[in-house]
Amino acid sequence: MKENSKNITRRSFIERTGTVAAGLTILPGSVMSGFGHKAPSDKLNIAVIGIGGMGNSNLKAVAPTENIIALCDVDWGYAKKVFTANPDAKAYWDWRKMYDEMGKSIDAVIVATADHSHCVAASNAITMGKHAYVQKPLTHSVYESRLLTKLAAKYKVATQMGNQGSSGEGVNLTTEWIQNGEIGEIRRVEAFTDRPIWPQGLNVPKGEWVPETLNWDLFIGPARMRPYNSIYTPWNWRGWWDFGTGALGDMACHILHPVFKGLKLQYPIKAQGSSTLLLSDCAPNAQMVTLTYPERIAPKGSKIKYPEVVVTWYDGGLQPPKPKGWPEGKNMNNRGGGVIFHGSKDTLICGCYGVDPWLLSGRVPNVPKTERRVEDGKHEMDWVRACKESPESRVLSKSDFSQAGPFNEMVVMGVLAVRLQGLNKELEWNGEKMEFTNISDTESLKICISDNFTITDGDPKFNKKWTDPMNAKQFAAEMVKHNYSKGYTLPDMPV
Image (cartoon, rainbow, N blue to C red):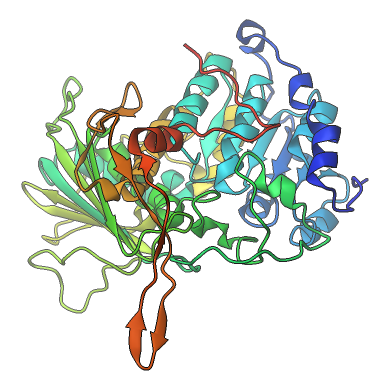
């Protein structure tokens, strides 16, 4: 039975649901430590939030063996086919109302909304003791990534980010080759994607009437209110800073995972970004980001050292230069992107999702299989397995938040570097404190709002509109930790 699909106003929405979050059933971690343990043959009761796109794919992956008991989406036109295909699942507009009404029945949630609402939906589920599968990028900000990492550990739930390549053979092989010393020490890595494949570099559009099947207030969620326009949703929200994280956020979680994992990275210490025209609201057409990671302590018995390494990212059609010895005519783009690991002994290349790793020398390594394999690369079912295991003996999923959280910080740090490029310097980052250390209290920043490009009598003209000067330190702090709109709150950060 579906909730009334009539579009509702922001005021009536807040009046109806503003108290829902406060009414969530929260149990202490000591009570939750063994909660949700099931036999492998038992079925999980799963709720899916955001079902029109990747959420439907995730749903289909778990539906054959588990119970889908609730579905939630803000666009009932886009999601209609999914509601229809799952008539036994109760349908909702608002995940907060769903948690309030069905929280005691739900074992686990899948969150596949726009990036900006991943954390608020997932974090509140975790504090209720629910296992969580969250699409990539895991979160929209650094603080949100840190929060999900710590909450998952506190409540001992099974988690997974939706970067499915982490369950594939390519990431396994790349990690094993690197850590077996097959290419030596790595001080430089280059990576790229062919995205975006949606519009970016756009001026803010004018408002339009909201379709009857879309609840715009709920889509906006924790972000700042703006007039609806059909350019934002479905899907094209990825290119708008308030909702998405651009091409980097979309694809780096797939492409950079073997880099983060294979090189045992944690927090960068320096970041620098550049791009085509940077706008205040929309991601640029192409970007280049450089992240510097400090030397890491090699585990006992390690075959390699982990020196300081510089990771450079390209998107928007840009690619790194082909290294010496590159096979003539070979396309560097493999399923949407690629990575080049420059080692002291050899060069390793893999595609998006870590697929098809190979060495520039032509040698094929034969190394011990130290990475756990996931049957047929079934990423969602690896999470389902973990959900049914006791926290004390659980085998972590391949992109458990203990790894996906810090990794996602790498991704959204790239976004920070791009959006702060107007400071015209390499940014220094304290990962533990989640703050930049070389932005002074007095520095200011202006960002272009619109380029207002025209051609008059064959002569190109620009009449750029800029923001007022902003305090750079405050602007950076808000991007690290967002101020949510009324009606949306995050749990406290665990100590």
